[in-house]
Length: 291
Image 1 (spheres, rainbow, N blue to C red):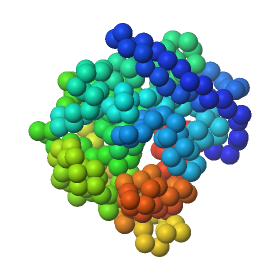
Image 2 (cartoon, one colour):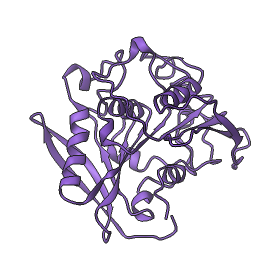
Image 3 (cartoon, rainbow, N blue to C red):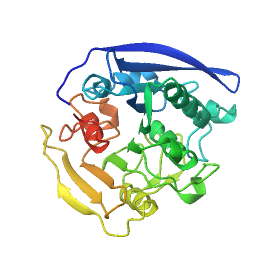
Image 4 (cartoon, rainbow, N blue to C red):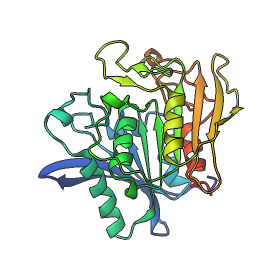
């Protein structure tokens, strides 16, 4: 991602099921259409503006250095109708169809010739990761790959999607072992121990789950990652690969919290931030967006 392109960010609205929804779009001012499209979904109590500025470098770098169109959709009242049965956000209670919302965004950009339908990726942090999870199960034909940060696969009894269409795709997972909200080892997700959001698998189980969906039946291969400047965290990468199958990778951030690893520290209450990996740059490499 060496070349720097001039970008523009615009606020857009779209009506889905009679409801007006909003999103931000960052794109290069000059680009070769159709371009890769990256959906970036915010966490709970966040907005498109917050997730856009949440990490350093921000996800806009995928537009400025990889030539992608980056879309930041906005959840209803800062939440999503996500992949877990146990959540009761307004988006769920009031029946917001967030899968239809995301499909409408993609369709609009594809039909206008701006986005490449074969290179649509979805990235989600925390609750946004659970929404990406739901999208990947209900509408996998839309996606060329997904990345989930601080989100694990819900336990079977806590799994919401109305459909489960198995369509192998590359999957990147990033998770801290000291995540106070979504336990790395699995169990009850919550907000710092309050407002339980149902049981989930461990991060390694989640990686194996996606590997199995991709037809990979071999064990993951683990390697040490760069140390970074925070000596109280360290990084391991586990890769699940098989010839002809889309790969799955899990970055385990030992000592890391419920944050997006990068140069900018997340809120202290969410735990330590490692810069051993730069999440946005790893996502670009994994999705082969790097120039």
